[in-house]
Length: 107
Length: 116
Image 1 (cartoon, rainbow over the protein chains, first blue to last red):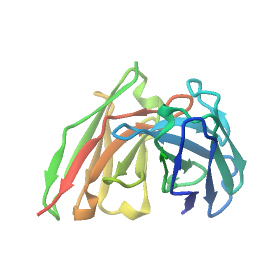
Image 2: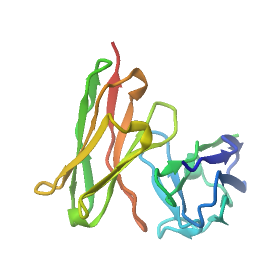
Image 3: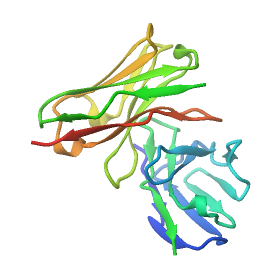
């Protein structure tokens, strides 16, 4: 199984900050990585597909990239609605696997 | 619009079985795979497997092989997750999800509580 390791597991930030979350795969997964956002108490929501493709309703302050084993999700100018938990997920091989999550909370 | 509506919360004792349903609407049922994902309280997301009504296939995560069954009813557009030999650690919210791009769709979640 492909293991996905996210770092950090949590971080505290302020509105307006720039943050970067890293996802490392235990083996190459090409660009088959997606990023999900889960606001507390809600279902997850797809933010990024294929490593870097922002979904249509995702603000441009989000960006993502990477290929192979190393991937990043960056949020510029952090907004109040961005405080949430973020998960990477690989769809390169079965079983689909998720990273452990990165909780972004208010400093 | 696409909707996935799951059945209500369930409580079971260890060793029992549970069956959760997910009724879909708003799209051609056979055109998309549906996944089951669970989340224990305060924990991350764990994929259990998927069903492909169009191809007739199912794929289960190895961890659950032998005690999980995912089925569907094309006539009603409903998929089912059955989990057997329940353990305390199976306590979680179970989601059905269409993990597609550019839009993903999730059911509202079904809390399954396993306790003696």
